Amino acid sequence: MWIHPTPEGLTEHHEERVAHLRLVIHGVPGQRPHVVRRRPVRRWVGRQLVRVGERLAADPSLRPVRSL
Image (tube, rainbow, N blue to C red; front, side):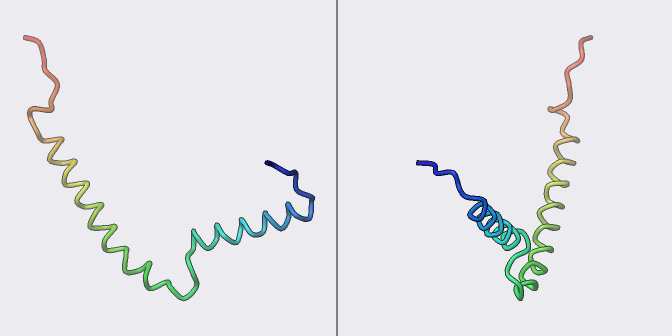
C-alpha cells in the first residue's frame, strides 16, 4: 500500500537515494585500484568486438545479393 510521504520524509528518501546512486556509480572510496585493473579487460573486450566486426564485414556470404 502506498502512503504519501511527508516533505521531510521525501527529502530524507531523496538524500538516501542520491547517496546510494553515488555509491553505485563511483564505488566505495578506497577501492579505486580495483576499477583501474578492470580497464585492460574492457579494452581487450573492445578489441575483440572490433575484430569480430571486421571479420563479419569481410565475409562474402553476408554481402547483399545483386540481380544479374
